[in-house]
Amino acid sequence: MTVAAAVDLSVNVGALRLSNPILAASGTFGYGVEFAHLVDLNRLGGIVVKGLSLEPISGAPAPRLCETPSGMLNAVGLQNIGVRAFVAEKLPELRQYRTAVIANVFGCTVDEYVAVIKILEGAEGLAAYELNISCPNTAHGGIQFGSNPQMVSEVVSAARQAAHRPLWVKLSPNVTDITVIARAAQEAGADALTVANTYQAMSIDVHTRKSKLGRVTGGLSGPAIKPITLRLVYEARRAVQIPVVGLGGIEKASDVLEYLIAGASAVQVGTANFSRPGACLDILNHLEICCRNSNINNINSLVGSFQADSA
Image (cartoon, rainbow, N blue to C red; front, side, top):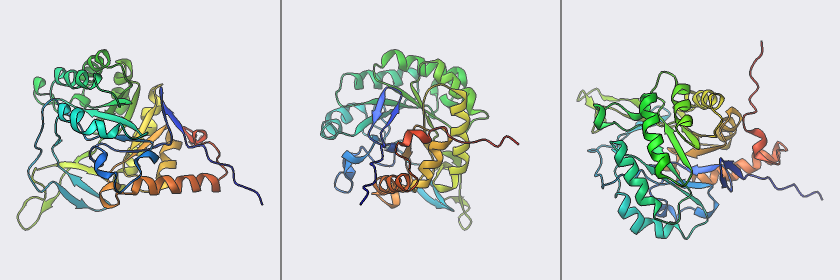
């Protein structure tokens, strides 16, 4: 009887080595510890914790979630306990696990981003930072950091100077040309890119003629966005020399394979966690089966293997 060879699912995102390419996305998995009784956290490739700001944020008014065809809208408003409480209350628990923990960081000014990172720099148990640059820059009239190459360069450069850990930059899809933003992040010192955040969208209650959310607009996520984000991953990866982590609409193993073939080195699972808390591990289990059935012994052989039509 022939024993099937083990599949090597380990991947590298720059200098960071992960046991497998499946990470839980920021904002969909709490701080990680809340899922410990439902999911074996040690089996995950990584956890990107809920976004951390300098001071606690109470978030947006309810309702915060709204179902859409093949997806959902969310307007949570970046609610979080603040970076100091995270370091004191959550990080000690997370240090018990082998899983790579990535801290998602945001602010409304460059100084706020830097201040959050400096606090995290003094704490043990983090593998990397992920900059959320889809936030409004209050010092520049509220325009998103991630929509302007110059502002991307400014915030990433400042974060790079403050951070000694790997620095990932989470790009917004709400831009005209993501390659321009991707290059700006790379040139400013990003070690990897996360592509991409949610899409600005809205849904209306026809009876009340008001938004179905507590805010007028929210972020669209879920399976509906996967084909669009897959293109963004492909374009971004071709434009830079640093790794790309794909994020958008991943619900099954074949979704992961598509992102890897398009050029992603790893992926993040987001919306699926809301309906299936064990989604990450379900996908991981099926991913190994898919690779074994296709005689893929090392998952890295898939990365960037897309064959463009030459006709």
